[in-house]
Image (tube, rainbow, N blue to C red; front, side, top):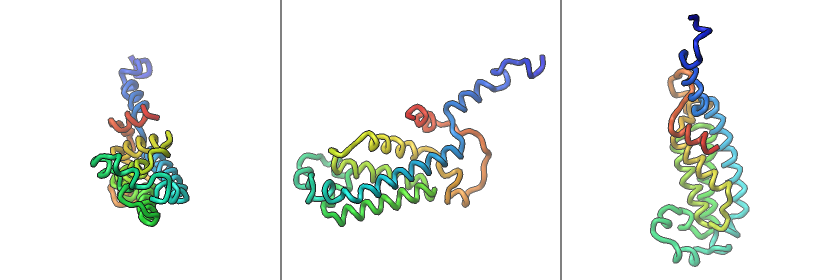
Length: 181
């Protein structure tokens, strides 16, 4: 029996199918990082114009109304709840923009993913009246980014690393990402 007449599962076709369905290439993960980082940076830059009316003490939800209604865990997670001034919010949002930019270009990607996720969570907790479905997806996608090898291709950090093979990457994070999307 020649190799051409063998069933596809005999030569690994079934495994390749599962890898293709649940895996990602390094290039696809790099594109995911670049697009997610660009969208995040755009979203954060657009929020600068809403800092005064929605995130400061002079806006719709001042800290003296919010803080009595939240517990200690909420206070610990929400860094934006510790600054009521517009300047404090601008500094935090600027730090978020720098993290999103560094995430996009692939510098210390895992650290920037953790910081971006945490700071975005903090920002959305500051005024939960403004949460939309996009915010929830940013939370999910940034969370998955913490576990994905996003700096394997087209990244600043990649130039420092040794080159590896070009196979499909399959992990719990890639499976969760593909099931989410």
